[in-house]
Amino acid sequence: MQLKVSSRYKDDAILKLHEEKSFIQNENLRLRSEEAAREAVLSTLREELARETLAKSNIQLELSSKEKNAQQLQQQHQEDMNKLGSELESLLELLYSKRCAFDIMKGSS
Image: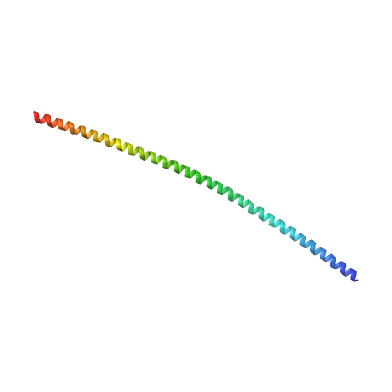
């Protein structure tokens, strides 16, 4: 009789170990599945970060180009204004000399 009881405890212990092993295997699968899901999310986030970094870089390049163009336009505008100022000064000098000539001619008549 003691042999039967002992055998029954042994069978129960083996069954319990199989249940624990099955539980551990299932838990391991669940954890691996969660890890794979996290890796998929991380991969997606990395891709988004790469796209955003590229977009930011493109925007910075475009901004730099526009700033350079704006500086060139400002420089050209300043050069044009200087040229116009010189032309205006020349025209005023010419007008003044014509006026003086006119005044001299008017005075001598």
